[in-house]
Length: 476
Ligand SMILES: [Zn+2]
Image 1 (cartoon, rainbow, N blue to C red):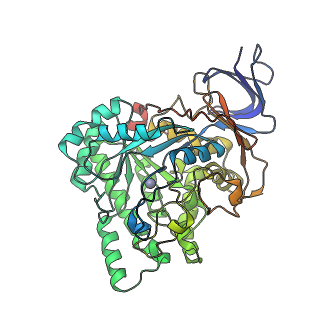
Image 2 (cartoon, helix red, strand yellow; image 1 turned 180 degrees about the vertical axis):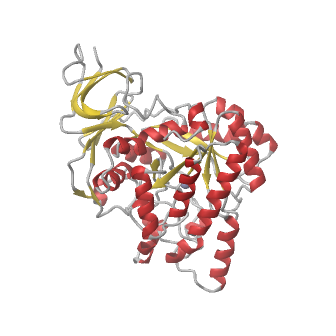
Image 3 (cartoon, rainbow, N blue to C red; image 1 turned 30 degrees about the horizontal axis):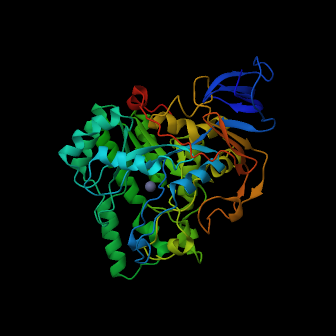
């Protein structure tokens, strides 16, 4: 007896794309088989005829309920990005069933403490399953380093480091010596480095110079957070990682130069992985010139058409392994309160549109396969960040996290279609070629026909472990 039977969908697995039935018992997938072939009754049946069925999406990079620095709010205190409840609800509507957020930014608290705090902030509030990258910042203390092994053993094996943002208070930048020390310790215990790589010296020098020359308009952000900065920073991190034997996951690759550096390292067999954000596949720094241009911004910065195209190509068939959003949703007045290269607010609402945009840009426009789509939207994040095979794959024994997608759709997105807690979207007017229809989280139908039907906020913390082969060489 199945608790749930998903019938006749076009099911995407690593081995094949075929019409299949999926039998679910409890929270897990129990069986897969040709339509009509699974034996026995089912308590509930979902008809997926005409829909693609992919593993529930995994958002590898989001920031929910994160305080917004006052430099980005025009001095207004107490502003935070949208809540855990709102962000994870929007994620479910977009077919995403697991999100990876971060522990606190900066400060002197120790890693294990920051993980506990973040757990408390998500428990009982998240509609999706969740986990956290642990942020290490500034001069990482020996005591902090000594806790990394324990963090990894207790299910948080990924550590985020910024090589820039020395201007923030407290500064986030981790300099080379500390970065190397963290890499060595994380490698020793089987973890993965997660890096925001920009060349801080170059960024800071350029920022000062442009401010002195009164060249501060926000549409020049890509000259501060430049292609050269990404090129140098990615290559330095790759070189340090090679020395340490450390696996690296680069968040938000923004330039052709970054994608090329990653591809070269992977060709040498180095375990280097890269993410692109979905807005970087569609927009460029030209969009900054629009009247509300800052709304498109996510740090580092949108670059040129050649970069947008290189990232799309690499995500469709090359060195980009995952599509993320860097989700950080504020109201429009906050997002637009800073309009210069010094104060444009980072991030935007994207957690719901991620899979739609990935499908549209990669499958509909570039001819990538449904399997490649499932990889960049779910499977690869699961593998690289240690959720696999519990998450990221439709297979017996895995969690029954499923996204049922209408891939025959052609729909111009309106703000009213989206569920984020905000009053604007950079995706208004975007023509999506896929619309998520039904979302299943660990066997429960949570979104159906445009409604959230399971409102228990049943998201769970998912402990992770990165497989040795993922840390040894690029596997996806
Ligand atoms: Zn981020």
